[in-house]
Length: 124
Image (cartoon, rainbow, N blue to C red):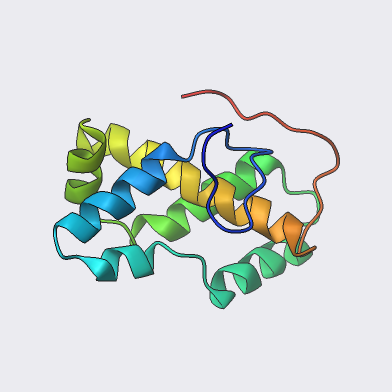
């Protein structure tokens, strides 16, 4: 298993390399602000809790999509592209998927939500 960010379990995301590469590149470019913006916040956990309570039958993929949309404005696509060596949209999808999965895993760790069984998301 690859390195995990804080409170991640690897249950949904088996490769957090895009996130670590993004953080590394942002720091190399003197953009600590991007690292901070891509960290999980208390507001992120509240957002998940609100979503789950308002839509208890929400699927995992629907939750992922909602979180990807939430995180999109918090990442720099140019930095993501340079970090991952891929076109902007491909790099963004990989990074945003890692961020969304991290929040879901951490939310389960903190018992904000519970996944009904072991899930595997479609691979990139």
